[in-house]
Length: 262
Ligand SMILES: [Zn+2]
Image (tube, rainbow, N blue to C red; front, side, top):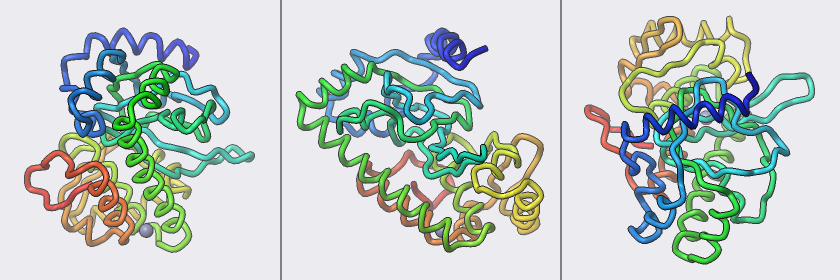
């Protein structure tokens, strides 16, 4: 099955799942004034994608703008030797493809679904026209771009300075910020790919977090047991990214029992 087939069949599943989450599950849509939100919502369709679907590759034309309502999408840089590095993570706080308002016509990086996504999608040309005709909508998109730029900048600095244990804790917090509940549907293989290390190395780092009772690992899922402890184990970069996100998008949905934000 080609990625295109996967996406088309996912549209049908998305339609059935359309009422499972409220539109405001996407924080960017929730933050828009009612008029701008209504203008966008009048032109979107619900879609859903399974883990592993590649929404776009570098240089693909940007045909759709996606507003995730759940799940995780990684922004990946592909290297010539077949390896990759994650430079950003987008979930319900953000939007994919919105660089069309800046004049971009093709994707810069790979967009890979890490945890099953439900989203609204809008035709990219229609979205660009809507934003160019509405300064309020455009201003919100620019604010989000700044927050995403801050996340990517922090990731670049983090990757060059902070050790794997800190980066793993940070990545788990960023994922936790973007999902409902405390269970992350992630494998150690996936974590190793995202953090650019070999699988045995990530096993050791995850094992340490588990020994400290911060997470519980079982095949295909990681449960966050102690969010505050994980924040202490993470480098400062999670706090920095979360601060930018709060500044531009407002506070995240409340998470019972948590003092953290993202
Ligand atoms: Zn860091």
